[in-house]
Length: 355
Image (cartoon, rainbow, N blue to C red; front, side, top):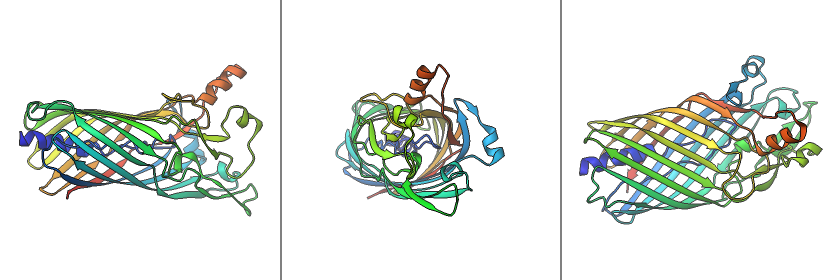
């Protein structure tokens, strides 16, 4: 049973990596997933993620001319998730996560097309607390199990972070909120639901699956999208003059194989920001969409420390219609759909310490 629990722990370690790759602002979808253990104690996980988004999509169609013409938006995104997990008993555990985020965004259109300039942000993201329970008795369910988690996300991150934008004359600056994709927080108090599962065919070979959903009942957070300017009549009519507080979700599934202290895994991951929220309204500015990625990973497990590396790479990217897009389509009779920039891949590396 010890070997099987070790494989389950490795699968859970890999589960810490989850972050969307682009202007579709999916942040903080990393789950916690503790292993079945009757030893009370703490674990500390430090997970780093980096990606560069620069390819624009409308629907599933890549706007290759944006890169060719040099008009594309480029986001450099770095995030450190600090997660502490407390094992209460064989079935129950508690998790706390605080992200630290650093973003840099390069564009022309945000600066009156007077040149390519940067804006950025840095700070803590939204704090999460969750409780988890293994649904089957780990003493009896040796080969597989299902873990459910329920938590709360608090709006501790700055959702009105501001920087200076160049005007069309390029020799003057105006202070305004940075783009939604690089805001450290979203301004909403949310509810998180998680499902983590594994099944081991042998001591070496197993499969895993997980699901994470963040429900944000708040509709808008009041942060302006005008970058220090004045909202247009159209933006006010379709409520894109302020930022939305959207729901987020992520799901993963794959196969895992253990060789000595190393675990090699491969699977598929889907991350999404829906156009319609589960609870509450869906107005305000948002870039809904989803990304499907292949997710190879490797984990090295020692007695006190575990190291993991994952490099998901995009298979499909889709910028879907927002609430505002749909309403404009109905009003004008002309199909409306905005764009968003996505990354090709994501680098995720972390370590877990037994305290």
